Image (cartoon, rainbow, N blue to C red):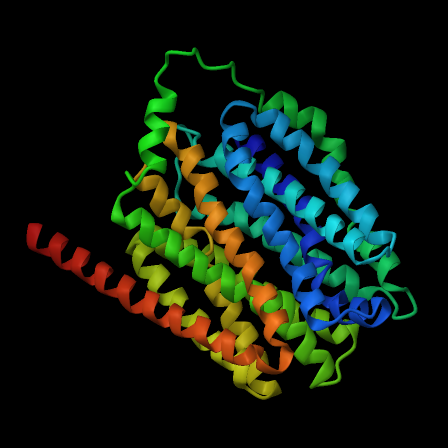
Length: 392
């Protein structure tokens, strides 16, 4: 893949991900305007992750053979979802809109990751993955900024559609995406690809791959519970912040994530992804406790730590790639995304079911899981370093 191909994918993921950032700050307004209970808010927020969860394996398979089609279909689904949310219809219509946004985002993300990680010329270095993630996080920040800059008099449906308008960039890029990333010819019936994929699904994955699945799930639970539910509602109900204030609080985490992504990727390529995963997991654990149980200054510090923790979002996939044959990677990307997006779905849903008043305890429990992951990863990194030192 040429540098222009990577730049094209980054522009695509930026434009697609603006839709994600434009949702969180509007959650309290949606609750008031649509008279939604906490359990409905949790389901509405979590339906994005649910849609990605059910789409991940099919999109992983589709991306393996129909990469251009996957990239072209993504913006169509995103536009349809944004329009349904703009209608401000009844609760099932809003959920359907979020589901379509989730399906579109999953198509674009899995296809983009597959294009980058299967490129033999470009390799799968942490820096290259983090550049792609940088573009996505910039898109989230763009959505937050768009919502924060719109006047309060602009109702949530209009604010949502205006802030999500960059998705039209991807619509215009579709012809170029199809040329740059054409569909692959269908594999012959006897090529053995099904036989290779079967062991990966039937328990043939190495322990390190399973560990990366667990780390990804913890990260997704932390991100979705805090940014898609707890932070917006605590900011509004406890701290009295308006739409712009909520956007600034969520934007703080995104800015830190953006600033840390490339340096953290650079360090990971030198000291190892596992060591850096241990460090960012510890940050995530501290951030979860601060956001879940702390006063406003601690919540702000927790947002900073959340941003640092999410700077390692792409590392598990990089480790999975190191332990996976190229022909199986599209499968395992899809399976990994199923676990991650199932967690992104369950996080807000559980928060909504237990109510905002008790969500801090749940988020703190996720923080305990992040600490456990940090300790386990740190031990592995130290053992690996000791083994290399003894061999040298």
